[in-house]
Image: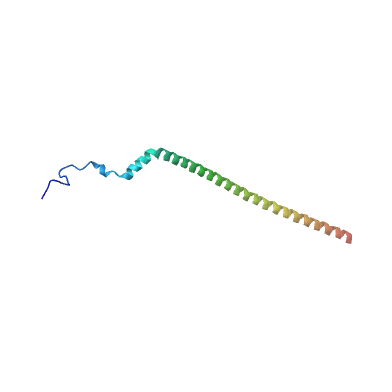
Length: 109
């Protein structure tokens, strides 16, 4: 048997952990270097817009609540005014009725 060629190298140290490099991690590092600042700036801008939108939403909700309160107040005032007008009309009709009775009594008497 011929033993001149040995495919495995006994006693030689293994290659440094170069074979253990994760290509996905390298790609992620490159991505971070190329686009990290832009991504962070975009995220900050989106956060700023979200904050402004939340503030605007709160303002609109507060204004709608105020308008709703005013509408209910106006409705209550209108109900009170209508009730007062109905009472005034009733009193005026009653007064007219009493005057008519008085005129009829004068003509009969």
